Length: 162
Image 1 (spheres, rainbow, N blue to C red):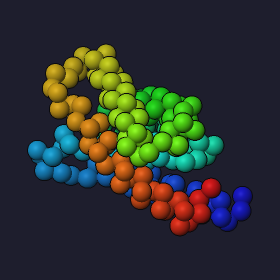
Image 2 (image 1 turned 30 degrees about the horizontal axis):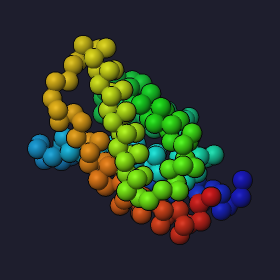
Image 3 (image 1 turned 135 degrees about the vertical axis):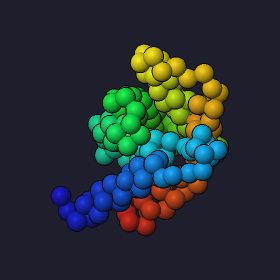
């Protein structure tokens, strides 16, 4: 593995690590429901940009870390992120060639799918969610997608991650 490839791996790992940290930073009580799924957004970006390097296995691993950090049932986020990564990789050529607002709509569908999988996993464990605010992270994730995309694309180009 050459040094440029290792540097690229380093950038991917740092951005995923930062996303995991952002997912557990304390927020004021009223703002918790608005926290986007940072890890999912970063995984979706890297799966779009480098589907051969960031795939279902990476998504599964990050999902397990997310489950541990948020004390959710082990495997809930892992399954949700793996499904989202799989769909992103299957459709990446179509998604990459559309304007950012259309990408945001695709991200909305993926984020809603992630939330649906989390909802089902909670329902199976007799922890039903009866609050509409459960879906807000999908909305906020969609709204900040253009910013996440721009920042990660800048980092990918600046550090020549390929």
